[in-house]
Each structure stands twice: as C-alpha cells, then as structure tokens.
Amino acid sequence: MALEIGQVAPDFTSIDQDGNEIKLSDYQGKKVVLYFYPKDMTPGCTAEACDLRDNYEKLLAEGWVVLGVSTDAAERHQRFIAKYELPFPLIADVDHKVHDLYGTWQLKKTFGKEYMGTVRTTFLIDEKGILTDIIKKVKTKEHTKQIIS
Image (cartoon, rainbow, N blue to C red):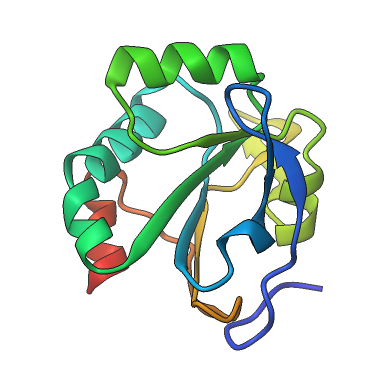
C-alpha cells in the first residue's frame, strides 16, 4: 500500500554514516525532510545533496531537519559527506528496510533491463510525524525550492 499525505510516517530504526542508531521518532517535534536517492557520488544524487547543502541554513530557518536515505554502506556515506561537505546525516539502508516501509524500493527499467532500485522520492513530515507532502518528481538541482514552496 502506497503512503499518502495525512498518514503517520512509518517509524524506523537504522544506522547513519557513523554507524550510530537513528530513528525517525528521535525527530518527533521537528519537521523532517526524508529524502530517498539512488546512489552516493552519482551526478543526480550529488546535485540533489549539494542543493540541500547549499540551502541548508534556509531549511533550518524554516524549521526543517534533513535526513538522506540510500542503500549505500555507512563507509561510502562518510566519503560522500566528506567530499561534498554535507551538513546532514545519511542513513545507510543497505537492506532497504526503510525503503520498503516508504515504498521507494521498486522495480525499475533502464535500457531494457529490469532491476530493483531506489525511486527518488522525498517525504515531508510535520512535527507530529504526519506526512504533509510526497515529492515524486524531484528536481535535483532545485530540490530546496520544491520543499520550501
């Protein structure tokens, strides 16, 4: 079943880039940008992360906390964060359990090949843990505008 605006965002427990436990419920009382992206160090994902980085102070001023999620391992996230000076945590969802909760691990097709992968999607969650928006057509270079608009 697909998630819909107005539903409670599914809680999860995973690890961040440093191997620390991270839960959505830890952010209760804060607005959360939970963005799912396919892979660290790739052009579209780097553009998206850097747009969020470049507008991070603006997001903070609007009351947002940013959490990125991909199936990359924690060590790869560390390199991605270091290379691009990302100021927010990245969740290492290597077993795609968080993806499964949010419906972002799906069958994809590229050049006639089918495979399971991440569908780039951003969930906006209010202070009470309710989904207030689901951005499915992410503009990687202008993602902050989609969030704040």
